[in-house]
Length: 406
Image 1 (cartoon, rainbow, N blue to C red):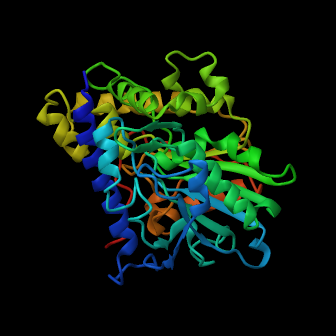
Image 2 (cartoon, one colour; image 1 turned 180 degrees about the vertical axis):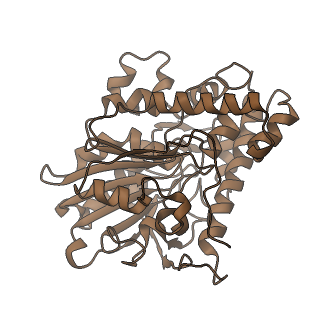
């Protein structure tokens, strides 16, 4: 079985690597890309000190925060709210470590300005559908995808993610989102999961005249057995839900019937109950899920699997078949095809995780196109009602999609 301490170490290392990679790619300055993927705009941090008195605080008790770049022209009354990713914490020690994390995943005291690129870019050429919208980057500092509602007085840990989510949305309403004609909530990884779990909640804050939609990038985490034949990752999720007191803030239509209720942390059990239009950007071979859900580095994972998940060209035929089986289970857990207006999707076979914030993946590199559509075109067409979008890569083996020389 997967032990809590081991999960903490694996989760911390994993997200340090992934977050560092994403940050480095975004921050890369002129290095000779074939396209202008180095463009970004630095946006300052906005704190909400008034939220503290209502208990809406980060793990360490500091105020919630976000970054906002105001919309202009015909985008002045349109809002894109993107939730930061960054894993979860399932133990007291893990959560305490997050309060010191250099990326501010547990404390706004450490947070710095944010570079907007990809779906947050203000460049029309690079982000044609959302460049002039009000674009918001919500900082993630609670460790449970904005679902927690508990407090640890001994260690002074505030598991208040649900209150933080509400405080940030209310603050944005006061800054003009109450007059929005369109509002799209999105997120990456743990933020993508949050966009799913809080989709209808977000809708409830907006006026009835607002066209509200939700989108998740790499947030569709699969409930599936690993190569050991166990649900080790489900145990991890169960500990998160219990530590943070998240059950009461998970979608009630799911928790009313699902046992254990912590399974309602999984999108496949929540999405059937979501009443708001939802778009899924994901890979059926999501790099994170392959490495930490299907083949986690625990219980003496064979070196052949360590090599395989880090370089799929080394996989044996049996391992390839297991990977294909994972893809089949992932596709089977998606919403049923047919109503692409209500449930849109862009499902690749790329070995990737969190793509919409990287300019190459978002709209530039041809390797990330599906049915001759970029991710930007697919989400833009769906959000603005130009077309119904349900695109799934026909390729049934994992692939490296990056083709632009670095």
